[in-house]
Image 1 (cartoon, rainbow, N blue to C red):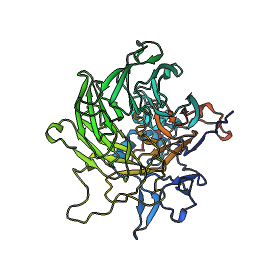
Image 2: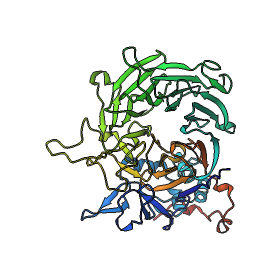
Image 3: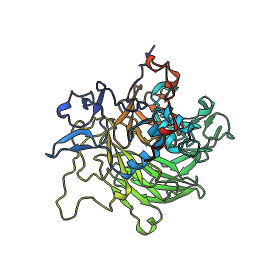
Image 4: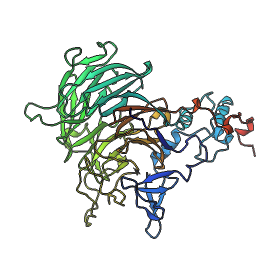
Amino acid sequence: MAVTPAPQVDSIDSEDDDEDANEDDEVYMGADGGQANAGRDPYGRFLYRSTSSSAGSRSRSSDGSENNNLVPLDHVIAHSTAIRTSPSEGSARLGKAQKGANVNTLSMLAGREFNVSGNGKFSRAECCHVASRYLPTDGPSIVEQLNSRAYIGQFSKDGSLFVAGFQDRHIRVYNVEKGWAVQKDIQARNLRWTVTDTALSPDQRFLVYASINPVVHLVNVGSESGGVRSLANVTDIHEELNFSSDTREEGFGLWSLQFSEDGRELVAGSNDRSIYVYDLEANRPVLRITAHKDDVNSVVFADDSCHLIFSGSDDHTCKVWDRRCFAQRERPAGQLTGHLEGITFIDSKGDGRYFISNGKDQTIKLWDIRKMTSGSPAPKGVKPKIVPSFSWDYRWMDYPGMGKDVRHPYDQSLMTYKGHLVLRTLIRCYFSPLASTGQRYIYTGSHDCCVYIFDLATGRQVSRLSYHRGTVRDCSWHPTEPMLVSSSWDGNLAKWEHLHGDKPLARNQRCLQMPQTNIHDFFPDDD
């Protein structure tokens, strides 16, 4: 009988108000070693004894040498994120918290009872200030275990459903609110190699799935559909949505899919270097953009208006497309440069301005589209700098730049996050939920069988979830609960939660008392 390895979580306790990680905790850093170098791990990453992780930008001293300290992001996105997760001034004053520090939850509850906010309840920012501390790092418990690689695993927009796609043609829809019961077990049709992507319609009645061919299939997964088992054209209709035209060869495949907010359109990225938009009412593709010089691995609508599309490609670039003016220009609104290798995934912040991308150069990058250019960011009339490049294949080789200080000379990104491994497959990354964390974190799967969580503004690795025995290709954070599900090539769907409240308290925590308060704790003295 196989022995399941015990889970390991390397995390910084986000509930502590003032404390950093233990200095004896070992974290991986993917930069050059410097004085702190303590050897390398099996993947060639340098090992450090440090309280900060490998994520984020690094500063340079006055003599030009590189410092290993992380430089917090000084940008409007960092400030807006802080505002979304800040306590009221009265609660901060009561908790005697320094600026930017966490306020004790009991102090915030006392502040609410004194109505320091003036509206008798927590503001959305105060809710996020509390909820963002409770990271889903406990467990995991196993939702599903199959003898097949899990490629897709995503919560629905409201968190009531979870969709998982496996290499053996199974696509399962779980009802989270009914104890993770299987609501639909779909046998994918015309599969080539694996399910490359799935997407739920905004009303959660329909699911589309794609593979390495130009035909997407649409299935009714609503409660009014048939039984649990969905076999194409036997128990359910798997409607074909053909993204190819009659005049083109049908030899391309689709890597990425997303519904528009109104549910009338699909956007897709393909391995024929193109972006497609499919009109579901007209039942045909209405737009094809020859977008990149290589495979388009990821596409996403920038916001709910669906006017802007972000795309990422194996040609190392991210591009922004404005559908409102595409008929006149037939070229991107702009592009962003900074990755040294192909891009595996893109996630939009949902505000039409910021997004993140995962790259085969083993980095996540944060972008602001206001920094995009119409072409190369290299200054005209100046000899261009050399962009580092390597000859390798990420499907079976390790990154040749691992452990080296390689960076793009014209990097336009706001922030770079390192520590995870993007190898063997198109590993995905995401912003943490807006409702519960204020999008304070970024998280990603990894080839080293872990899930990594980074602080968006500081770049610090706040948690590393280790349980799986295969690549974690996808992961999904519940939109409102402290729950995260990782989907791995070991066939497991692992559910991570915050369970500290269900654990026995340590001896020094068993006598928690409400702080002694009075009205003067909330309001400054009159001078």
